[in-house]
Length: 74
Image (tube, rainbow, N blue to C red; front, side, top):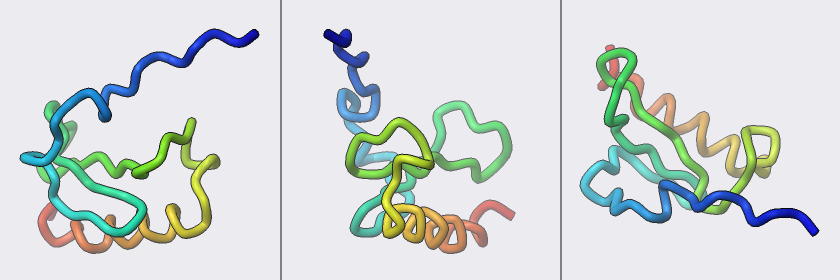
């Protein structure tokens, strides 16, 4: 039997005040410790291990959020 995965930090935390943009399947939040000005985290609404576990729609919408947020990060 596999061990339970660790708790999701994004589910445990109230992110509503950090949401920068969102689409049906993904949400972008301001990073608490940004590497650069305008750095955001784009997170799928469902649990996936990584980019490769995302559906085509989730990846497409993640890419769309990058373009939506681009003007705020330059």
